Length: 124
Figure 1: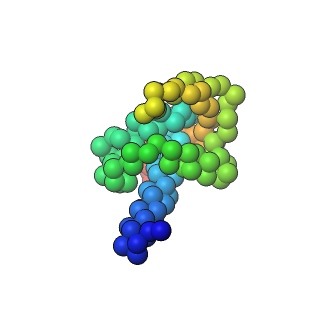
Figure 2: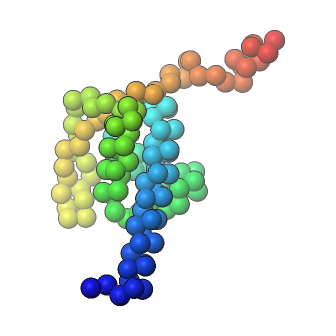
Figure 3: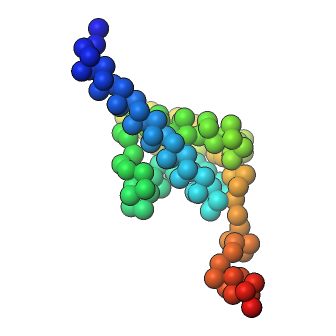
């Protein structure tokens, strides 16, 4: 049985994980607008990038939390499986597992993105 102090610490940790999952979901949506495909290892590397870390805080050591982010993105219609699989990087247990490659359903090709030049044309 957990002491009340341990139980409170566990509740805080669980709440912190949920906040990180929500923030990572928003970061994934931004990532998907710029990438036509998504592979979990690539996105994990992105999360460790300097700009993402400032927005999200340090990613947790447990990569399994990314699964909740991916499932939510699929449920929300942001990604769809391509049918292709790649081996992930080995886990802490030393195992590499096949993981799906996802297609972004919200990708915006660079040629169609609004940039400074297109805003000037629209204003002119």
